[in-house]
Image (cartoon, rainbow, N blue to C red):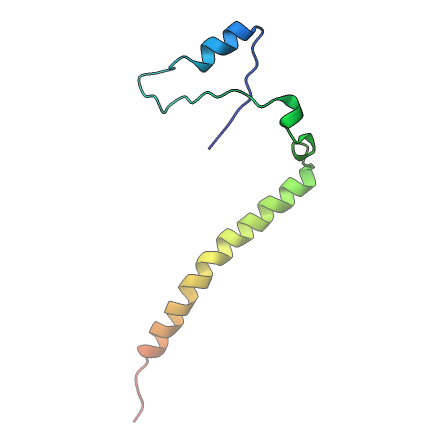
Length: 87
């Protein structure tokens, strides 16, 4: 689920936005108060670009390999089962 940080110039504007329904669909916009700055683990926010690239490559490899893992076994079983028997 995408998320974003929104800042306001006044506390009044933040309070109005947090308590306002943004559309007729109440699940379209969900607002919540931001955590206190001392409650945020700031070192987690700075992920180096190389590490992000490595994570994406690992996820891509997993997304390719994981379905193969489940599709390969039924394929082998079906191919062995459908071979003609030589008498």
